[in-house]
Amino acid sequence: MAKHETPLLDQLETGPWPSFVTDLKRQAATKPECWDILGILELSYKDRITHWKHGGIVGVFGYGGGIVGRYADMPKQFPGVEHFHTIRVAQPSSKYYSTANLRQLMDLWEKHGSGMTNFHGSTGDIILLGTRTENLEPFFWDLTHDMGQDLGGSGSNLRTPANCIGHSRCEWSCYDTEEACYHLTQHYQDEIHRPAFPYKFKFKFSGCPNDCVAAIARSDVSVIGTWRDEIRIDQAAVKEYVAGNYPPNGGSHSGKDWGKFDIQKEVIDLCPTDCMWMEGGELKIDDTECTRCMHCINVMPRALRPGADQGASICVGAKAPILDGAQFSTLIVPFMKVEKENEFEELIEFIESIWDWWMEVGKNRERVGETMQRVGLPTFLKVMGIEPIPQHVKEPRSNPYVFWKEEEVEGGFERDVEEFRRKHAA
Ligand code: HEM
Ligand code: HEM
Ligand code: SF4
Ligand code: SF4
Image 1 (cartoon, helix red, strand yellow):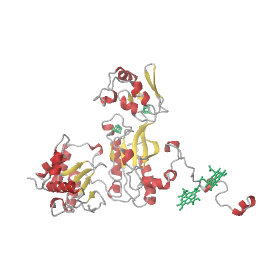
Image 2 (cartoon, helix red, strand yellow):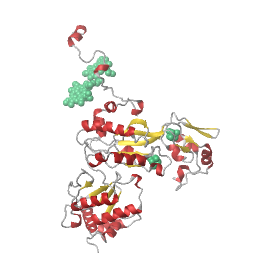
Image 3 (tube, protein in one colour):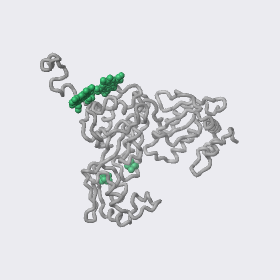
Image 4 (cartoon, helix red, strand yellow):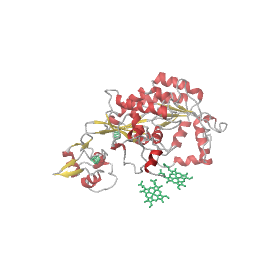
């Protein structure tokens, strides 16, 4: 029996897409607080404002984050959501699950919470939506003791890292994104659970420049796989594509008739650096000019593969607009080996150089991308101990406001005006 009238939400039960309203109503059969979620949401639809109070500070002992506290501003009308805290639970790399694991987690959530979830939060966490303060420690106890699972991150700390599926189901992954993500998550548990930074900080790991986890846009340190030798070409398979026996792009465009595959038009002419050509029926690539954009490989996955000398490019500084404007990560290390064998030593050293500096220099609530803008890329490279190279910029500066260090200028900055006047009388 419906506890609240929800005429506006009911409209969202129509249409072909899975309806969250229908799901919530089903959940409400066993979890009556779900009726209050529907009720307060209906009210927000009507009033066009949120009905959650500002902020909320809750958590579990030992940790400085992991739980987002939240309270309804109309607790009398909607007692089921008076407390409605969100718990972030660390997800496995790539989000592969067993039903046994999920069943166990859902049993816990039925016991301690609303039964409502978000699979997954944008950062990657399993999000358990809605519980009361007094349930937090008991839930955390069961999560850690019965399931061996932990909370994710929130606050001014390292947030939950995430990765593309990498080697597990993709031919293009240039390093083991899952292992890298898992290893660094374990390595930096302290930085995840106890905020020690000027602001939040995120890692994301993509196996190639297709960047399926959107690392370049959504992480302060974006680790994006690449290679530095030649694209591996299977000329026999190229011929199959040309003959029309293999569908281009793995059949991604089969929903529409784009005509017969034309390697010139669809691959060679679209290569951003114009470094490909056909010669005697064979596809040639000038790999010295290839920027590893992935286009040709994406179009002909059965004929082309990334090179064998694989690693990753490390880019730094992506963030959303607040305060100083949105940023993608900017290239800092063009190629780094990212290897389990040395426990990701090079990457860890790189990350800690950033933290050593940013934790001192970063202003309160200043993302590392903003700190980099404030001090300038040259200064950032200097603190990182990295030599500036042309790959660090898309184009050189156009303004002439160039800073020189005093030791670079003959005679230094101390000048005597009398000396000047001897040649140039006032
Ligand atoms: C025949 C008259 C003038 C000549 C031949 C002349 C020439 C120049 C030259 C060669 C520069 C350097 C440009 C560069 O750095 O690339 C310059 C810069 C400048 N001139 Fe003149 N100038 C003349 C008149 C004036 C006047 C009347 C003013 C101000 C009322 C003026 C203000 C400036 C300023 C402010 C700059 C610096 C611009 C900047 O780089 O920010 N100039 N001028
Ligand atoms: C309230 C008044 C003014 C403000 C707020 C102002 C502000 C500025 C700012 C922010 C810059 C850029 C500085 C930099 O990036 O290095 C600048 C440069 C400049 N301003 Fe002004 N300005 C004012 C009045 C004036 C006046 C009245 C003149 C000339 C009669 C003038 C001439 C210049 C020149 C020539 C430059 C270029 C200096 C350079 O080459 O480094 N400004 N001003
Ligand atoms: S980012 Fe690249 S390696 Fe990772 S899943 Fe996507 S295509 Fe594959
Ligand atoms: S990866 Fe991109 S730049 Fe390199 S050859 Fe293929 S299309 Fe050209």
